[in-house]
Amino acid sequence: MPVITLEGGKLNREQKRDLIHRFTSVASEVTNIPPQFFSVLIREQEDANLGFGGETVEEIKARMQP
Image (cartoon, rainbow, N blue to C red):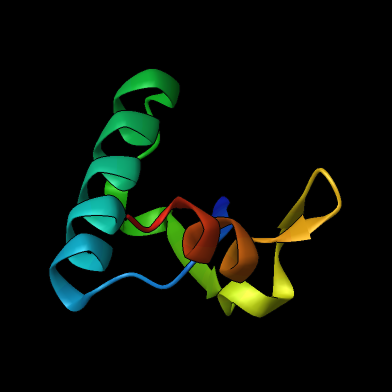
């Protein structure tokens, strides 16, 4: 059974449902594997646990606030 994994920041319930639906739909279309065989795993990370260019996402968001 294929597994699709997304690792990223926090998402709301609607975003998660939409991603799961779309990932499954597109993957099934492309591979010709029935949608019921796909698993989708969303791993959310806190902004303090993600970093880019030596800064946490938390720091980047704070710096970008007006």
